[in-house]
Length: 426
Image 1 (cartoon, rainbow, N blue to C red):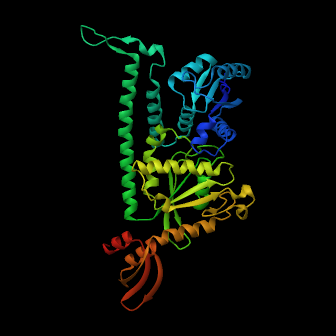
Image 2 (image 1 turned 90 degrees about the vertical axis):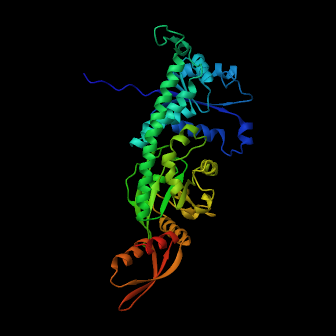
Image 3 (image 1 turned 30 degrees about the vertical axis):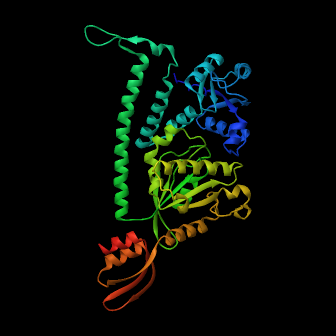
């Protein structure tokens, strides 16, 4: 007899909305847009959304976040909708989460828990799985704060005399702590391996161009359009987690490495920022950042601000150079939704449609010119017989002028100072 798959969970999305706090934080997105994003997050892992509601917050109730009347009103609506799980689009304390589960008689997860579940479902590589597990454990450890009474039961001590032993919460915290230490060691190995790969790339030094942006801005679609790769590109949040790199030849003939990275989101959980440091190191190593934006989204400016906030946080922690804005190019994607690139107010960005290919030649030309601006022009003479060094210059620089005589080839080449020094050691 064939087993039938269990039906998908029925979910409710509740958004506690503190208008004053949003205004104080200079948030430009509306409550409706924030709720729609939360619905998209939940739907992306197969939850069936049967109820969604915004609860304006006048004051914060420490025990439940929502006011007493709001909790009771939500309970009635949740019972009527026969909800299996409630997603509260906010950061809940362990006590608030427990109290809401008791009041509503259903499982409750907060925004961080939801994003962690999505990352757990999306991770494909060993590195991604390790990072997600680390983030999950860091989150679970923060939940072990007298949330559940069974965690306070004593366990037996050691030795013949017994003793007070340890509580279940202490045992759980110790086990999680041990696993976190092991995961960090494994991730350090991943980081070391990635560092070796970067070292190998520097020996054949192609500039690295990294795609960054808000989740679902179209980074993977753009990556595929530029490189001909087949990275998963779906119209959903966090479709791609694991970084992918491909070679690309620019119009000038310059070779580069294009890197697709994980998408950002507003209020990205701190556990994830820390856990995905190995992945984000690709951003730190990049010669040029392409900030891909969904220009058709009503909250495109707020999303761009969220991305910049994450990058600024990385810069403050020393994981990224403070001058990252100087080497960033804004790419205004999804112009086709607005009717074409001529309908996009471009400003300092480049309007493109990764889906139709419109604007991509201009983007490649701009990448070329930005990388060239960071290079100098050198006049070099190479013996005619030294074909390997001549070929090296063509691969790693832009040959602007060449003259040949019987014994030497004279070249004017645009190179970075690093490549010039490397050429002299060949």
